[in-house]
Image 1 (cartoon, rainbow, N blue to C red):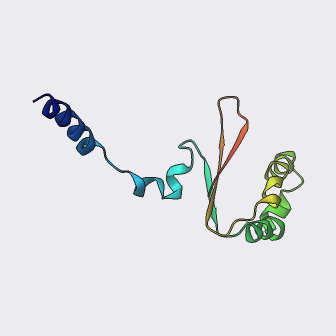
Image 2: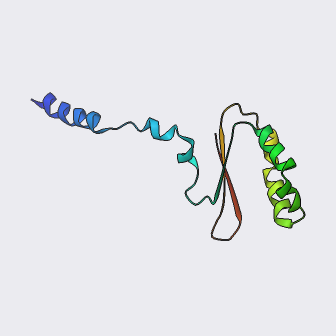
Length: 103
């Protein structure tokens, strides 16, 4: 009888557990909710090419904010990724730029 009383809670715990593996495999769930801009790319090299060759970004590259963004994204040169990547841009309470990368 005692073994049965110990077995019942154990079985209930096992049955009550739920696996959320499909939710965590989607990259969008890894980006913070307060991200203002989300960029999706499959290659870091392609993203760097867009930043260097985009006419709009070349036109506004003289502004200080763009130079700060370029310096903060400089660590992308060290990434060697083969799959998709999401980059989220947002601001925190102190109005500073927050960058998050989900791979």
